[in-house]
Length: 547
Image 1 (cartoon, rainbow, N blue to C red):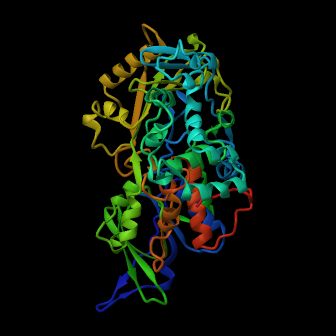
Image 2 (image 1 turned 45 degrees about the horizontal axis):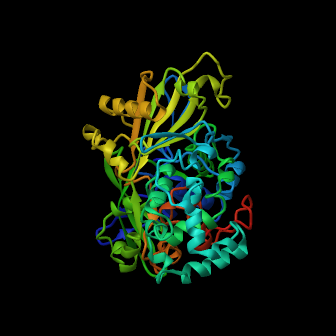
Image 3 (image 1 turned 180 degrees about the vertical axis):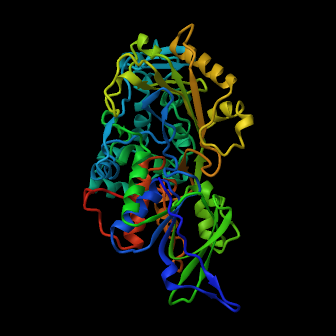
């Protein structure tokens, strides 16, 4: 995507800075991820704002959506960032439909997929995971015979019986929940003051907690996530805890990154301007109280010089770490409430390693797609597909082409440290996609053999990884901390200072963190609350944007 190089350059007199009114823009958006691209598209297509510019630090649009075709597999797309969406996430599914972006199912697996936990192999079948003789955890009698994914539901309902009357997606139920999250106490503590780990151990044995957490595949889902927000996402927000909803999971045929890229392309069609490789250095108030402006200074990393821009509104479509990389001595970040609120989330590390194989060796185990899960450091293993079976490509599938892709390791939390120890020579690289060391590939292969109970595997012909802990992202996603009320902080974050036209959006400080749904919810709230945009005609009017 070509970036427009036109900027609003200021001129100087000997006594003052003179600004040509034609060179003032209406809205500057900094951050070319999905929330930034969506905000730019919505503002420009509203026809309410003539001059909207989108600035992005890197050389691409997409942020933590990064979709890359693999060598010798042009129709198999590796999703190095976010991978897909659920049908119940209406703001995503209906936006995709509105933009006419072709989608396809995102397989979540079958009963032949595997668990490998505490050195024991289990199929992901109900009869395996509910059999006390097969499950390698010392569960209490009342915990036996329960699917590991349902153990948390059991704990929630035991501790909070009122949840039995909450119907996901129901407006009246949502209002009940909003009262509960403010008032509910467990053992004398407000729910929002507790971490999820602490809450679950009040109802589950440590062994049941470990079984559920290990089988889930992600540490952050069972850590110090704010318990009230965790329950809202898993039990109140439609679908995210429902196994049926995952049967409706989808992704985009040409990769999930196609969503922000399409938004950016449509933005440009309406004369929106995109400036890639621009780093925001500073922003300060400028002008009178009657005509307030913000003076922005960017580093143009391609031309190696600074650019000054004047804007009426500034939207920072950035996660926590990107905000921290801005000048913290700036007047904006001196606001005490904002400084506290920015620390209300934890940045969760994430790492992905993809391996390209000459054939889909897992099919000999009757595994077709989806994921297998282990407590080994590789944690989650996704079977991404075979080139000759892709019905979604630009050409007809050729059954003779057997090259296949595996997401060999998708880890978060402490498991990322295991792999980072093997990446010393690449830590300071500016590249997003990196080539793993021979030791990393060898170690992953050894763990894949153990997970699949095989003595040998074919050698991968190509391998790539991404470590989302690197700047400017800091991690793969975020979770709200205990000891705060996220629903009060969200609107404060979106416009931290009432007297300044500066806004923050993105999934980081949203009601559905780690999902495109959260990024779009946050962006849409900024647009409706502070730019007076009307409800999108393509979005279900009963859809809930959150706090």
